[in-house]
Length: 190
Image (cartoon, rainbow, N blue to C red):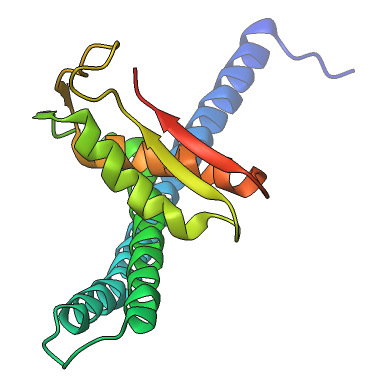
């Protein structure tokens, strides 16, 4: 019978544990490199999406502004309404792409807010204008903000990131617009 001493068995076991630890360390290093490589591909993809989609949208918005300014001649009311709708829809798609990029920045801890003092009525008014193209036909969108001399106090300025606040309101109004097939949607500020 083969008798292995306790010492020999423990040495063999220790050698096996060391080989396993070395293999595990090597595997961890390989996974870390693969993760970095994957994140690099993801970053390049997000950058490509940003450039390939946002740039043409910005051009569309600029072109519509140019035509609406009258630089190409007089624009009739019907064309002006359609061009305004194109502009607002393009801005919405641009914002969706920006949201994707913001989400990625948030996940990678590169997300920043640009806090500034802003007039809430102006932010809400812009959000309502940008949300109008999202409404079903026949649905109306209203902004209800207290006016000077009303029972409610005037809304004070707030310290926030106006662009992000506007985006948030457009998203909320867009959600309301999707589920409202008749009647109206009201953004009420108090």
